[in-house]
Length: 338
Image (cartoon, rainbow, N blue to C red; front, side):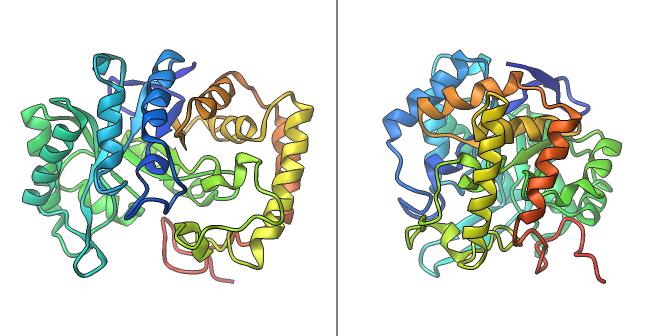
């Protein structure tokens, strides 16, 4: 496994990070496929054995389930892991809506609950999961900084924030991390966001390295999502990658990428992770894993090196992709206007 310094912090993180979202899901069982929790605990332990140190969870992943699984998987080995988890969003089961709340008190309470589920007394990287326009930034930063002062969070940051939102929060304190979507199909952060993070000393975790399953290489043109799977809506954080019209096209693109990966002696997931890690501005390429087999396949990507000609070949293949233009305001940078 290869490691990188995480922004301006003293953390050395594994270039591949273990994403816990597929294990926890979001609201109900099965909305990201069905997982075997015992096997998921073994997957966490396997990842540690193979050098993965960064594990990313959130209360929103299965209403705390992902954190519980991670806590069990790390039992007795906490010192070997760097835990990233989040706050600021929860599901109201009575109203059946997601609620964003990043007030100071909510952040501190969320952290306390996460610490219990994770079976630890500190969190390495604590993030606000989504922007919350209803909370004054100074209140949110007070919460983060209080946790840092108490030692319950070593470093703090944000996830899915725009540059303008980061700028506002930085008026009240230092942010150490940004977690944001990044993969072969989603390159929106390359234009401005990565430069902003570098100038602020923020370490970057790129999530969705396998484009939420598209780059696993196991989907064929007959593939369809279960009705409870969040991806069945077609929209992937503002990109129309999984719509009924675009998904078959994008699967054909992945088949070409898979063939190219084989020419390099790689699997498609390994190629996809290597592509993310080729960008030195990305400290951690996060990918969702829930089984030992997935861990075993993904880890060798850390040693894969793509040449400039390899990157150019991938660029050529990706010209055929559909739905990669942002259509609505899930923005890190606003969509370009012609």
